[in-house]
Length: 489
Image (cartoon, rainbow, N blue to C red; front, side, top):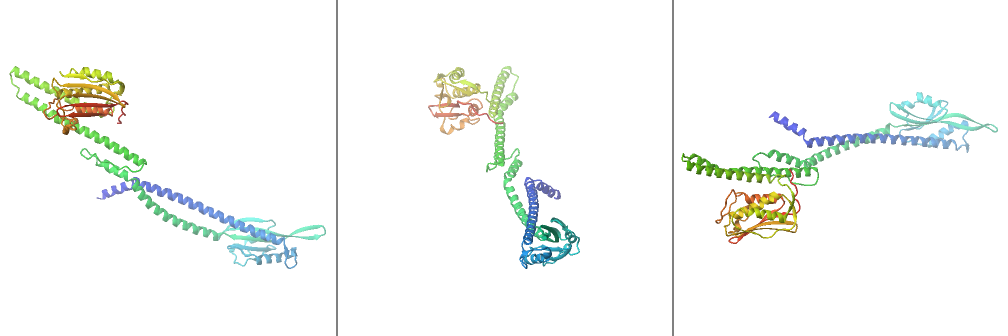
């Protein structure tokens, strides 16, 4: 029982449906991870760009203030008015979240925006000391214990008149705008976590839906497998898979159904062959065995017995030949096609048919034109019809042969003035081992008309029967002028 469970799980894990779902999950999970990572990096990039724009804007506003006038004096800021400049800017500007405005005088922190400074921006920190020594603007980015810090440092240079016709510049202080990105990064990470949660839920729902869809798509394959497993020597080969859609699985279903059709025909042909052989060979074998068991020492009786045995053996040989011919009729190479002149073929067959028996033979007409067909098989079919007519007529009866080409078809007929065939028997006469009733004489195994029908079908044609009891019968072999479509193996 445990081994059975293991095998069941093994089949489940290795099934096409499971593998499709597994690859789907791997593909979706991989693409989702790559997408989430790309989105996170893009958001971080945009945060940094926004912060840098904000820093640049603050520095630009500070420069505008430097180049403006002191509200106290209504004159441009002088070198000794740097404190007023710093006080005015810090008072007027409100920094954004996680943004710090700092001013330095003589290398020391003077005033900053009303917000608690992190450890990195404390007055005695190395960063403050570095900024206090700057003489040129500087843009920087450093990592701190609280995250990434972006800054812009702007040394304050006031131009004033030291001597007539001569100006000098003197560095009085440094203005710094700094921004800690930890807040924005936490927001990005929070948004990404929401995206991850939603993605997991969506992926789970999509996987369930994919499992259901894969089951429906692969349903024909499972049905195909069950149908194939159910096939055995005594199974029902009539099973077919319903055809739906127009995809590759539909093509496979159609191919499988066609294969089942060929298998059914092959098994039916094999079964018919066995049944026919057992049905028809049993009688001559019984006759031969009976005569051999009763064989005496009398030479005359022995001679008569041997004649009976030889006749039965000849009949068995003809029967086997007929069965083999019917079996070959279902093979692709049954016909050897060539261009056949209808009128010439009619004359040849008529000449051969007249030797079958003493009847009042007549040639009605000869068709004009040619067809693509197997000359020997057509001759065999018409001769079989003529032979069938001789078996159901008498010496004074008329047997007529003829042909005509019209409407893309060649028609070969054999008619007789025999007793005719009852309407109830007209469909049955083409079956194997069917023999005439209503007093009609019959010789052979009853395969003649079945052979004629097989030859007609191989040419994509048919056999027509017109008969009236007491009047006679006409068998017509209808063959298309165009060559028959080759059968597939």
